[in-house]
Length: 224
Image 1 (cartoon, rainbow, N blue to C red):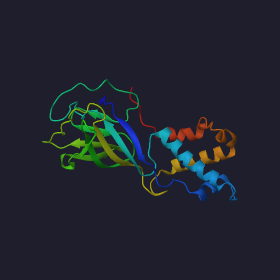
Image 2 (cartoon, rainbow, N blue to C red):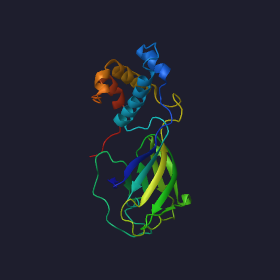
Image 3 (tube, rainbow, N blue to C red):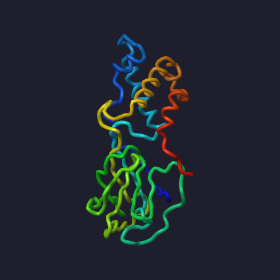
Image 4 (cartoon, one colour):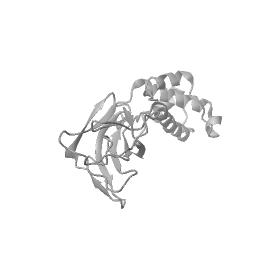
């Protein structure tokens, strides 16, 4: 497997959190409403920390994967060009020589569109009839159909391809996020609430070991 110079960019963050304010307060044993704004902020921060530690999108988000070349190492239409420099650590998108694009932002839901940039910076949408997508181990795979070719990239050597995807367990809280990850977020919120001086100073340090153990079971294997 070889890695492209693809980059992942978050476009639209989750519209809700995997943990409600009421549940966070119940876990932290907070009865008053005085700190509701703080706890709400800690829930969002804990969810983002969980996503950073695991590489997951917990609730539905929109992402764009940017590629310089098509997955078979060509600029489209069979025109070869050197474009890769070996396997990178923790690649954001990987390619194989069989017309397959792998999107390891997990859990993958769907491709919404693929766009091709020209030399003037204008985009055209790639015909969805030439590819399809599938999911394996929460990762997305975009596969060019047999007998088709990727459109030719014309004089746009960098960031020529933008693949828009959705990722996440589900759009609604508690409807798909694994229970142990929800528990880890509860524990992290309580930890930060009980130790709020470093949080207030912006010095949110290492995740406690018992929480990190939960995150660790969801981390993707890193390629080296």
